[in-house]
Length: 183
Image 1 (cartoon, rainbow, N blue to C red):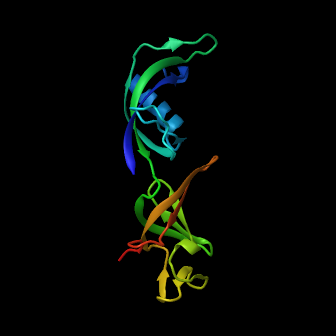
Image 2 (cartoon, rainbow, N blue to C red):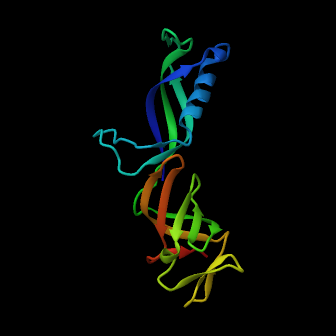
Image 3 (cartoon, helix red, strand yellow):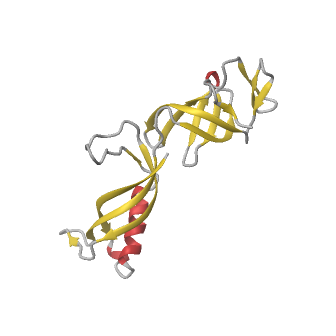
């Protein structure tokens, strides 16, 4: 699921960018700092952290204080800023659809937009599933159907975990009613 969140922070504007418009430079700096980052969001009403991590997709807009502060020993200015960010926030039991981007002997990688989710071979169907290396697809033995690269599938998220340095790991299953190959 995608959400738009509001964030308050301080942005550092390096001296090499002083001649340019402040909002333009601040947007560049915030995008460089935040886009693609894995974050744990807090519930605004309770302050409690949500269990599932999110990925910041992009910074949408900002409101920056024009007067900044200079810290001794650092020629940059520091400005208070409020900005909106688009985040991808997958949650447990969420039903998602996506294209199969890779088929391996271990399972399927599904394009979820911001990242690829994974479905282990034993989570593809309730029947026996094998990998067909000649076709590069998974074969469902009882129904005699294939799951190929490019197929659209529907799956349910059952595990989300951060992967240090790589973003999020999203594991899914298609072994439930209504899940599986679409169309």
